[in-house]
Length: 343
Image (cartoon, rainbow, N blue to C red):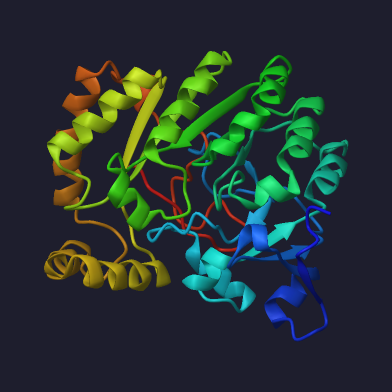
């Protein structure tokens, strides 16, 4: 058997209270995913309602998993793990909660007479194409449920596993509006391995953009987060945006990094270890809050806008916010999830 090496822990064998509340069925470890524990849960609902922000291009989200093996040091969703009595650091990277019945639950919710076929976004909290998807294959069922119900949807991902579903997404686009967005903010492969150790390489994601375009789908790109003093150099941004243009990206949006709640401590601990000379500058830049100063935001915009113009990403659609990115913290996730902002 493919999973013959896995070990199982029953749900009642010392499970954390937060996981028990989430409907834990079992916890699984397997040699093929060394260091990662999958906590399989049965969810009661799949659709998450976004309320209070009319500026968002979507009103509902679907999140197949909680926690993310991409292990991005800056991930805004890290604090959500604390609501499961797990920590926002290593646990977020290695204790992955998988909603194994999400496609079936979603299909039932979409079949309700009250469903108005409003846009649904995937990837607002954790990546739907992280490594767990290679085992559980939840996305094909989700895509089919949305398309067959006539519901438009969008996907934001760093995961090249999306290529597996391109034929299905192409078929879905013939029934409903489908928007694909790829997240790629770090062009330097060495820095990417430090800050996003579980993600596909920049080159692999550029190839993903090409594959999406070759499949006849649009592909927006989210350059986020732009990391102060590490990825905001003119040459760095020029090389990245140029590579995105060469890959065929149809739109590009850029956002500075914000460090909210426990994510801030997790990122700054890495910074102190790898770039101690920057710690003081970061404390000045972020002060006592989660966001960079208005002066830095204005400076970054002045740096990026000419580069977008130079590489053919003019005003309007090419600079609009990708379909999956919440405008305000706390608007678009399972439970009080912080989110990204556009300048």
